[in-house]
Length: 307
Ligand code: CP
Image 1 (cartoon, rainbow, N blue to C red):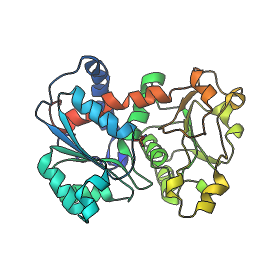
Image 2 (image 1 turned 180 degrees about the vertical axis):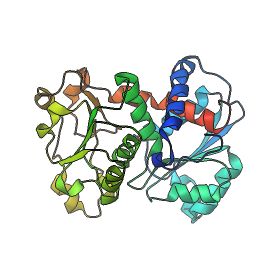
Image 3 (image 1 turned 120 degrees about the horizontal axis):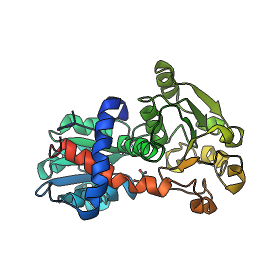
Image 4 (image 1 turned 90 degrees about the vertical axis):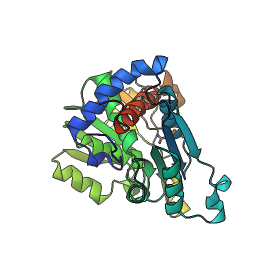
């Protein structure tokens, strides 16, 4: 099911496969506390061509807690890419030095290219504007852990739904389940792409397009907030037009359900007020911490030390 498998898009997975991953993640939550040496002698190779805190460090933490090691190329200027080495040759070198490669790149399809070149498994740690499959796995697991289910929930997704790969991957992940309704909330210029809406239509998932979270906050069980992806806008003026256009604060939450879960893939800029962190609505730091056991489970399954 997972052995030697590339992880390129959440859409490549069946619900049953995710459920298997989640059952191992549950075990790994305990294993992470004491650590283990089941991956002694194994090396994870990281190729990060874009900045990261959570994804890069949680993969490292996961590998170390399993007894393995990590080699990392994250400072491009300190690598031979600065001398002009191409991506394909860089992937070939990492393949020679490690057992599993995790790659992040600004160009959509970079992880797929890596998988075509490499004979060892590739995990997409985010490429372009559409795919960040391990983030979507963490997000789905977080909802299942704290709400016990995904089916039947009203899920709001707020923010940059055009350029945000975490938001798009989360939408794709939800299509493997049966949420009651997805509320897609964004400035008009940051609506989801047609191909995303087409998949929702194909999977017969009910959704609504909205511009203001205040209009729907009272209906939502899980609100997934995302930042505006400033670095992906082709023109600075396009970013300036939407900057600061939404913010979750205590005033908005006066109309929320009492058990609303607020999630965020992070990093947060200004879209969730700091005062929300202290409320029972805030799940985003718990969500980020689950990145370690989930990635422990995924690595163990792919390398075949857990079945
Ligand atoms: N959620 C996420 O991908 O965070 P980083 O960019 O810090 O890895």
